[in-house]
Every structure is written in C-alpha cells, then in structure tokens.
Amino acid sequence: MFANGVITLIIISILLEVYLYFNFSKFISNKFILWFIVFAWIAILINFGYNLIFFDRNVGQTQTTMWATGLFMLFLFPRIILFLFFSIQDIFIGFGWIFNRITNHQISENSFLPSRRKFVMISGLAVASIPFFSLIYGMTLGKYNYKVIKKKLAYQRLPKSFDGFKILHITDIHSGSLDNKEKIEGAIDMINQQEFDVLLFTGDIVNNFHWEMDKWYDVFSKIKQAPHGNFAVLGNHDYGEYSDWKSEEEKEENFEKIKAIFPKIGMRLLLNENVSITKNNEKIALVGVQNWGTRFKKLGDLDVASRNVDFSDFKILMSHDPSHWNEIVKSDPKHYDLTLSGHTHGMQLGIEVPKIGLRWSPAQYIYPQWAGFYDFEGKIINVNRGFGYHFYPGRVGVWPEITVIELKTKNV
Image (cartoon, rainbow, N blue to C red; front, side, top):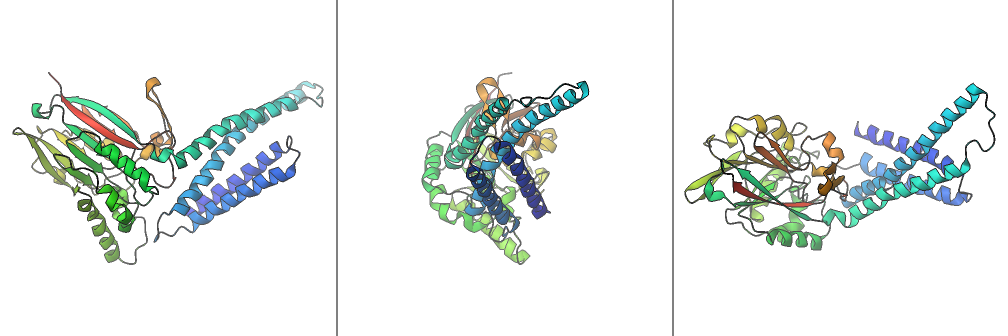
C-alpha cells in the first residue's frame, strides 16, 4: 500500500514535469537547459522512490532517507506553485477561446499575448522561490533555530505555595535524526540557562531503536537537575513499532533498553503513574501516562495513572499525543488542570506570526491542537513543537521549542 502511494506520487510528479516543460519551452530556446532540469528532477524522483519503496524497517530512518525526502520536497513545492500559475492562465485562455468560437470573433496570432505568458512565468518563478529557499534554510539552519517560549498560566486551584512554580517542557528529541552535536549542545545550554523547578519531557526520545541514543548520552546527560526532579513519559516512537522484529523477545529487549535510557540522562520515567510535588506542606500531582493516540498505541490509562490522586488536587498530566487530551482528558471528571504534549511537531512546516495572529500548518487538518496553548473550561494543554525532527530533515516556520511555563495563583 505504501509503495503504491509512492509510485503514484512519482507518476504525478513526472506528468507535472511534462506540463511544465512544454510551458517553459515556449520561452527558453536552449533545450539543453530544459532537459538538464528534467533529468535532474527524474534523478531526484528515482532517489526518493528507491529510498522509500525499499525502506528497510530493520535499519530505520537514516540521514540518506531523510535527505532524499528533503530534496524531493525542495523541488516539488516550487513545481506545484508553477503548475498553479500556468494552469490558471491556461484555464483563462481556454475560456477565451470558447468565447471567441461562440461569438465568432476573429482569433489573431496575438490573441494569447505571449508577453502575458512571460509575465506569468516570471511571477510564478518569483513566488516559487519562496518555498525553495525556505526549505533550504529549514534543512540547514531552521531545524536548529531553537526558541524559548515563556508563558504564565493562572489557576484558582493552584496551591499558594506553588505561585511562581516554573516548568520546563521539552519533547520529541528523536535522537536518531539528529546530526549536529555542536548545535544540540547549544540547545542544552539554552535549557540550562532557564530557571525552572521541574523539567518534563513528553516522549519520543528515539525514532525506533535504543541504539539511536548511544552517541548522545554525553550531551543530554548535561541537562541540569531541577529542584523537584526531571521526569519523562514515552511517545509512540519509543515502543519499537516501526520495525519488523525477528521475535517478540527482540522487540521487548529493545523496549526495555529504551526505557533504560531515561535514568542515564537523569530523568525518571513515569509509566501510568503519578508523583506528588510538595512545597510548604502543600502539594500538586504530576501524572504521567503511556502513549495514547487516536492513530497510535492506546496504552495510556488515566485511572491507573491517577490512583490515589484526589479531584481537589491540582494536576499536571504528561501525555505525548494531544489527541488524548482532545478525546478524553479535557472531559475527564477528575479535572486535569494542565496537560503537556508534543507529537505533532507542527508538521515542521507552517507560518506563525504571533503579532498579527497568523498561524497555519498542515498539522491543523489532522490535530485540532497542533502547537501552543489551548483552553477548555479552565483545563489547558500545551502542545510543544518538539526539540528534534523526523522524516523531513528540517523545519520551516515552526521552530524547535523549549517551553518555560510559570504557574500563578489566580485570586477569586
């Protein structure tokens, strides 16, 4: 099924190239340039198709497969924009031709205005250059363009002793994708420069295999210990689901070694369980569930994870997939005050201009809560955009995120 989808995408891309070739050939007399572009695109398609159709699930995602995908996107998006420009023009020309035939107007040699065609081509190239250079930036610098997002949240239910309590939230490291140790060390320095009382990581430490973390232990173990601890939960990629294992025993061994990663980098893993954080004889509950997603594993169990937690307790829930909050958590009678999630990465592609309220990403068509803070009757979720990246080796417009949340007591 997956291979058929890739083949269909390649066929559509080839037909798109044929259409663009005939449009550009009207203005570019040097056919060598045109054929060079065509064959370069075909080479990219072959590379992309080969890497995805013959993807080895026992090896997993590699830099080669990610860059094959990145190059495909780099040259596909501008072509789609050029196709839109030329096709809209051809539609108008078609309607004009039909109108002339119906009204018996004389059609001259200049009816289709070659100068207008050239203007459309130049305009299309100008617009197409925007995603082209944006994707280049995303694959070189954007994926390490870390942003510290600070947010204050006020609650009536928050104990007074926790007024000013700070949470550092990170998620989706995807260590198997990372490729620049210096940049990651810089991001760890950014984390350590923040003031926080507890550090919470909400899943996807690896892409699929425990050994993906081997060369990163010395980096992530430098994350400082928060006064009230560093905690973690698992994400969908931490269960080894994206491989064909020789046996269940082999899969389980990988899973156990993934769980063993967390104490090595100073984090306590919560598996459907909770801990109390106490200050001045007052407490809040930190609840951590296993992954629960509408499209992925449903191992998260709120009832088990919240055992011995009272309704009146202020609760922070760590749940990797925001669909859990949307489908179950926000309506749960136990009232989870703050949920921390990740998973979506904001699709690593989008436009966010907070000053004018502009927010768009393909992720919003899949996840109602795809990035940032959302409130439902006083129950809030933060969907962190992620620390690392996956599949596409870059980020455009949706930057890697380190979130610092300050809890405040709201006066009645």
